[in-house]
Amino acid sequence: MKFVVQNINDITDSRELLESKPHRFTSIFVYLVLSLICAALIWCWFSEKEIVVKTNGIIRPSGEINKVANMASSKIDSIKFKNGQTVKKDDILYTLDHSEIDLQKKSIETKIENLNQDIENLKKLKTSISDGKNYFDKDNDKEKDYYNKYLNYEKGNSISLSDSNTILSSKNDINSKISLYTLLKKSINEGKNYVEADTLVSDQYKNYNLSEKQLEDKISELQKSYDSLKAKNTDNDTLNQAENLLKTSKNDLEKFKSDYNLKISQTIEELKTKNNDLDSNLNKINDSNNLAKDKNKTTILVQVDDALKASNEKLKDIQDNLKVIDTNIDKCTVKAPSDGVLDTLADLNIGDIVQAGAVVANILPDKAKYKVDLYIADRDIANIKSGQAIKYSFPSLPYKEYGFLNGKIEKISADSKVNKSSGISFYTAEAYIDSNKVYSHKGEESEIKNGMTCEAQIITRKEKMLYYLLEKLNLKD
Image 1 (cartoon, one colour):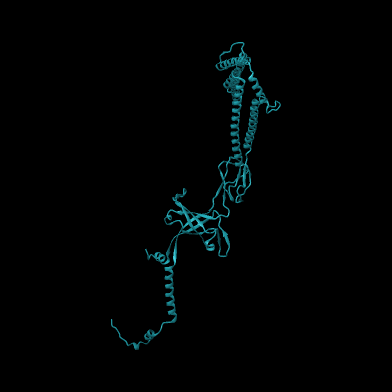
Image 2: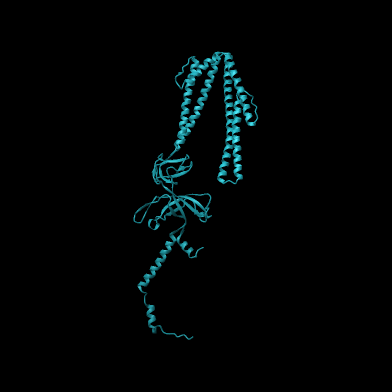
């Protein structure tokens, strides 16, 4: 290659170009670009990027949510509320039918009235015995029995041996009857006659055998008729009718035996009861004969005191039962446990039966501050801590128009939970929210409501924008 050397004075265009000054716009543009680059570098150094974890949450009242629970099993009698209604504490929400409890209450009140009357009469009897004077009115139905009791007390103080002999004779007669009825029962059960002729129960046994034989003969005839119809291949309706008659007759026989046995047993028990009463009376007679009048008086007074004590204890028990019944009646009137807004959980109608313990509604605090229940994925929980700032946005209130609300994390669950349907593990957290209201760029006010969903951006840390950009450009580890 051959180089050619020329004199610069001979190159006029190049010389003019080298000696000329740059255009003013070019200088301004270069300086402007350099200034922008410097400003960008300064901004990247001093500004910070928020590193956030996005999660979902639900708005909940920060105050206590009270449950309206049904305390008694019964059907609904009346409904006095609507869903979403603002209620005050002790407002009646609905009532339950308590007619059966009212009947129980009426029965117990009658028992209490009778017991109070007995206690009053026992006190008057005690006074009558102490004073030796009958203060009871024989024409008063409520005092007639005690009037006679006092007369019996006076007779007991002067009873003679002839009375004792009369009672013994009655006891012997009753014991004889018990023996006869026992033999009658044994004869019936074993199908063998143990009853002697011309006794109190001999005719009864004959009548029993006669009735039993009539029923057995009827069964025999029906059995023959049934067998005959069956052998002739009679139609099913006729055969079933004959079979039903046979079964009915057999049942009648069994019922007759059972009823007759029961009647005899009742007669024996009645005789034994009378015998016991006679034993009691005989003991009283013997005591009266063995004790002096004053000692008998003391004994009767002790009995009256014992009866008074027992009646008072029984009265207390019944009054306690009445309190329980009154409580159960009160439970049939379901009231609001607190002030707030009613959120029904079940569709109730008059006549529906509601079980005890069923939660039918919640009462949400009225105009209370809200909190946010957050659900944080297992992969994000490592960087989440209490006290971290949060920015909330709401699907129903787009952040481009309404912006964000701020808050902070207050609590984080100690353990994870697993979604049973998806099998995904997550943690729960509780955060507060600074305000219940948001404003659009036009200044329009909107209020967040309980149950709204939101997206929460949890600010885990801040990083210089320069480092963030370098990291995104893969220029920084």
